[in-house]
Amino acid sequence: MIPDIQNEKPKYEFSLVSVGLRGLRIPRNILRDNGNFEFSNPKVSIYISLPYNQRGIHVSRGYEAIEKVLEENSLSTWDLARKLAETTLRSNNYSNRVIVKLSGKVIEVGNMLNQVEEEDFTLTYMLRRSGESIYILSVRAYGMTACPCAYEISKTLTNGNSIVTHTQRAIGIVNLKTKYIIPNGIHEVAELIRSSMSMRLHMKLKREEEARELLKVRENLKFVEDVAREILHKLTLIKDLGDDVIVMVKVISFESVHPYNVEAKHIATLGQLRKLSK
Image 1 (tube, one colour):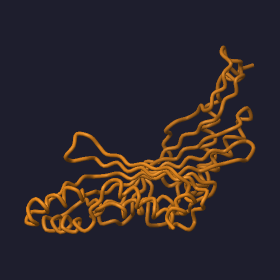
Image 2 (image 1 turned 135 degrees about the horizontal axis):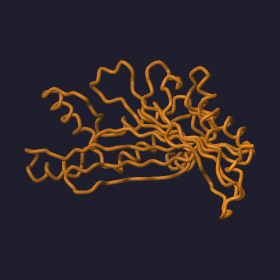
Image 3 (image 1 turned 90 degrees about the vertical axis):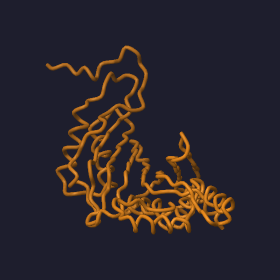
Image 4 (image 1 turned 180 degrees about the vertical axis):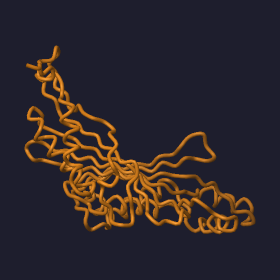
């Protein structure tokens, strides 16, 4: 009889909150999109809790869960995470919790490569044997900020003859912790981040186009704090998100005139933010 080493008692009987497979690449066609976007380089990680009296997990069961779910037709990111969690929990009766993480990039199909419409996402789904579950959607998107302080001071110092400022790339990160699916959440949140910046990023700009874009930026000067607050405000306007959704917004400006970056961050429920927005 083949021994089951994983079922042995460990030398030190401590429970572990998570053990599992990390960063397994999956076929991108398993993820269903809405026709305008496609997924690039998707990865999945699956972790289960391990009780104090179990030496190890059965790693093959995690991979078998992925194999089984991948046999199905294409699924949304939300459905894929849920099905992987349910299948994994059924095959590991010694575990009381499973965590599934899906990550990758989403790229707009048919984009003329002028504007960068690409975002990073991570969807985490946690399921307990009791049936309690939670989703955490994390979306990252890029834009550009232009400093209003340097602009106004240069205008004052030159009596309006020379108006300059510094610009830099910035990244916006939004985490949404919710009990419910947000069907178009990745794209909606990414667009919300980009539209809150001073300017979108462009793959290609001719000389005149570049100059005109920078002239337009004068009408949309923002600190990193301004961007973070605008993202928070726009999130309160999404009616599909309930007041109990926990929001984390972080904006990082990759400073062009300083040897450091600047970061703004806030965490709150949407209910708290909506009360402050009234």
